[in-house]
Amino acid sequence: MPTAEYLIPLALLGLALAASPLSAGEPEDAMVARRLEWFQDLKFGFMMHWGPYSQWGCIESWPLIEVDKWARPDDLAAWVERGKDIERFKRDYFALNRTFNPTKFDPAPWAAAAKRAGMKYVVFTTKHHDGFSMFDTRQTDYRITLTRKGGAVYAIYLAEDGRDAPPPEIALGGLSPAAGSEVTMLGAKERLAWRADGAGAIVALPPSLLQSPPCRHAWVLKLTPRE
Image 1: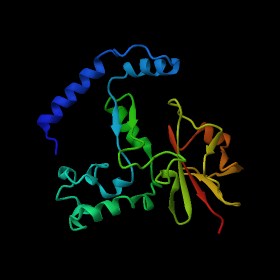
Image 2: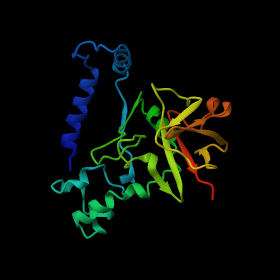
Image 3: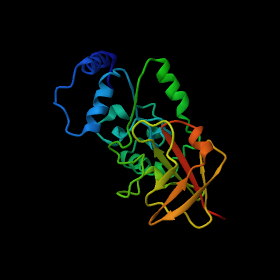
């Protein structure tokens, strides 16, 4: 496992890189250029990993690599409980998406702690080497928008271009709720109106949620089929 003698130089290197101007030349895309200019002045930020593996209290992806024993310490309960059998560990790791159900997800305290520390931005790893997508995609079923529990489906929607509030309508590509399904947003009480749209659905948000969303930058919709 990396020790302080390695982490300190790496931290200093990161600060040096953050303070250095970009030297790759101006990007052709104007939007990318604007975002890079915005990023250059932020300096200090917060990078986090969060996904199904969080249920085990282990780090992302690396415990799956047999030679990376540092990622499976002897005090890791999920490793010990499986008799330190790497194949069994891998099998159960890739099944964690079936129980990953972050209904109490509340990014506000995380954001508040980062802000108090002087951080200006957050980098959220939406897909690590294990392949689990913390966003909606039609390329794989191994994704947050197909996390099911008790018949319900949870779909996470990430804000575009750093916006604080959700859009008036949220498109759920590839998710088509059954007729009569109830759609709600975690942290809010309103039942949301929705309509089918091809292979997916469009969820309409009321003015109350647009003005006072339960959280900023990311929202979780719960699709509950009618019993």
